Image (cartoon, rainbow, N blue to C red):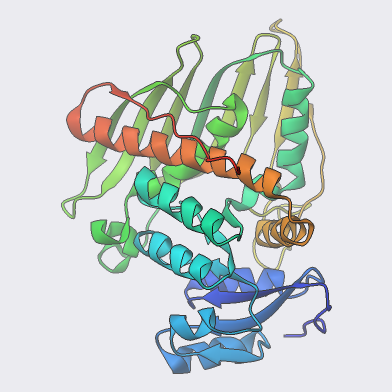
Length: 358
């Protein structure tokens, strides 16, 4: 693989772990002039060396702690299993490293709050990495909503599902590692709903199908706001792959596939990336046709890494706090959905806030 020479202004990132998602991240981010992949760590030193060789990374470490102690690393990308996010994000913050953390940020609200508290205490930035958040298409969608293209948002319907391969060996089937459809797949439609609504709901009612391992295979939920707005979320790990959302307003509607990674055409992309639809319908009448919104395309991993590098370089803590509030709202709602699905009753959603600087 050919990579760029590190720019003196590039954000030096260390990758904590060598799982498949880390390999995809490294592959897509390596060409960016805004980011330099400075190091990688694994608990298996040989695996870290192989990863570093594949992606032309200068240093590898056989312990996560060694990467956090590496003076050449300014920030870490954290793609470890969900249950390990809080521990290593907090340890990275204590080591003075900024953190770009894979979704979901944590397995519960209390952990998410502890992660942001650690980042604030040590003066570093923590950002949850939903790759589609950073896609030009998502930026276009948010701009349409802000401009009132569909009036005020009344309801959102969002779903994401796929079929797992060999269930017995997949970490998504392990409760102790933060597995299950809700955290792994449901966090995506939940994040889209939060993006469109701008706040957490007040109440949720959910139902799940459970595997013998104890994780949910599929979950559906109704989200309710006190002002009358509502949303429906669905996620699954035993269906054909699907990913779609409809945002319905008082004066129109938006449909989107909100894909993480996008391409211009349906064939020919070396990594199988696909076009992602964004359609807008202005007006309330039945005959009104949808218009397709065309935007830039590319890897969500690269877009996310470059956006993170920018806020770190500009020390834009206001942007980080806005993203942190969204992450806390998502964590609180996912936690309430899980409680509702277990108990079969409507559950109130905690309304967390990001502490402001003195």
